[in-house]
Image 1 (cartoon, rainbow, N blue to C red):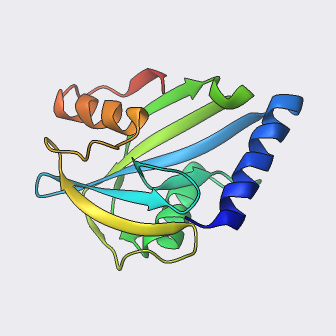
Image 2 (image 1 turned 90 degrees about the vertical axis):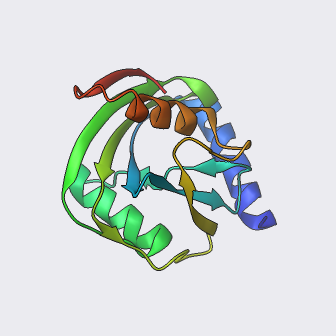
Length: 152
């Protein structure tokens, strides 16, 4: 993992502890043929859904498409709202909107932040998949059609 990015992530957690900001982020369930695309960050252990922060004056859809393009070189088709989640971990009030894309093309990691991207069977995720990612996949498999609202 990149030492520089790890240190930047540590600095961010200190900032969050002091200022307790409210943040808005997006994640995407990129699902095709019974598989989900997960990413591994250079600054954090484990597998995650692609995504990141929403920038000022950016719509949720624009943020989802930008993050997927930046992280894995993905071009997305139609997006569907999956859910809206909140967490107060890491000393911030974090809100995450999750979308689903079943029509997409991707080239693989596209920047220094992502060191690996890989499709995994929905029913056989890696052991080091983040709890939030694992929970979203389980919710997806439950086939409940309404958007989810809850804790990350």
